[in-house]
Image 1 (cartoon, rainbow, N blue to C red):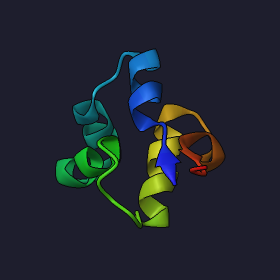
Image 2 (cartoon, rainbow, N blue to C red; image 1 turned 30 degrees about the vertical axis):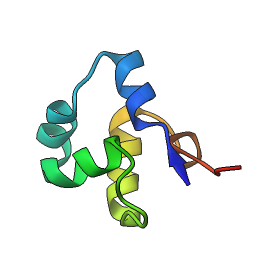
Image 3 (cartoon, one colour; image 1 turned 30 degrees about the horizontal axis):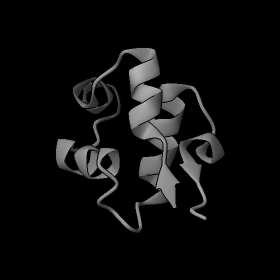
Length: 65
């Protein structure tokens, strides 16, 4: 899975720290998501991030080809 967090944050002119403040998710978890270092993110984390960004989890994640 590839995540579009970097693209979505750039479009909305937001930072990882903004997501951290709004969701309470640790910066290390968000940074790992941002740089696509995490292979199996928690579903709760994905839900909170997608809600904050105003997108669905499908829009946040894309299957890798």
